[in-house]
Amino acid sequence: MDLDDRVERVEGCKLCHGGGMSLGMDVLTEQEYPALQIFAERIRLETIKELGHLGFGHIGGSMSIAETLAVLYGWELQHDPDDPDWPGRDMLVLSKGHAGPALYAALALRGFFPKSELETLNQPHTRLPSHCDRKLTPGVDMTTGSLGQGLSAALGMALAFQMDSRRRNVYCIIGDGECDEGQIWEAALLAGAKKADRLTLFVDCNGRQLDGATKDVLDLGDVAAKFASFGWHVQEADGHDIGSIWKALSNAHMVTGRPHAIVLHTVKGKGCSFAEGKPNNHSMNISQDMVDEAVAEIQQRISDLVRGPKNPTIKGV
Ligand SMILES: Cc1ncc(C[n+]2csc(CCOP(=O)(O)OP(=O)(O)O)c2C)c(N)n1
Ligand SMILES: [Mg+2]
Image (cartoon, rainbow, N blue to C red; front, side):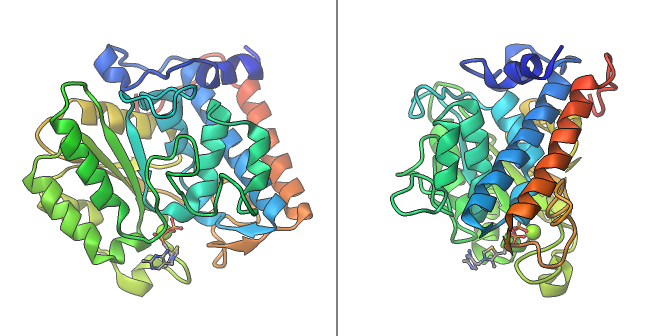
């Protein structure tokens, strides 16, 4: 199976599996697993090209959610790129809205708008502002960027979905630094009390925020235990392992009566050598040389995945 065939698995279908478990799909096949890995790498690739074209941007927190976006847009979300406002769709609130460029890459790869539009990131009259805007970008369901607010918006959607006979879910991604915002915990308390089981929250624990380590700025302690104490169904996952994220989502489908939190262990800047684990990787100036280096390394990983073992071990499944 070549690259295009594998990519086709996630980018070519009109709708994804849309809550695979509820449709009786309980395993990732040996084609789907690497296809989702490739999708994640292509999200990285397009994100770096976008930011490089602009010359700077939020690379660290964009790279750390590539696998999560791949599983969401390649498997989990019920959505229709030809009809972004389809009333039956699931919704994603990217509360850490500064990672918009990664979301735009996923949406473009899925066909919500032409890939060439990614070059307009943050330019005058663009539909792709640096932070997410639901009124501008096809496929973006909530305006975000002021940290701490997205979880409340997602909870409101989840409570509305609870009253809807159609089975719809809302997903939300917050950062670990974002958890310093008090509004996160107000929403967490209400979600538990309201048994908002249509809500699935990813906490991107990449260990760093704008200008330092999260534990030094304001130590979160045991974030999983904190959400559990508010009545949430909590799991931890390796945020760079497709199988681990997929498995957590599958488990979440089987638990009712509680909101779901998936604490993602990630690395800020993951998969891009000039940014991965670097202290200044929150928002960087990005030269053409840096883009070229990153593109080469990502393309190498994609080629390795294409040539990969015929029967890969499906971790976490
Ligand atoms: C209310 C608010 N305060 C401050 C900022 C500025 N800001 C943008 S990103 C960021 C750090 C976020 O850290 P984290 O949530 O860990 O994101 P990630 O590491 O995933 O980039 C800050 C403080 C903001 N966007 N909103
Ligand atoms: Mg962080």
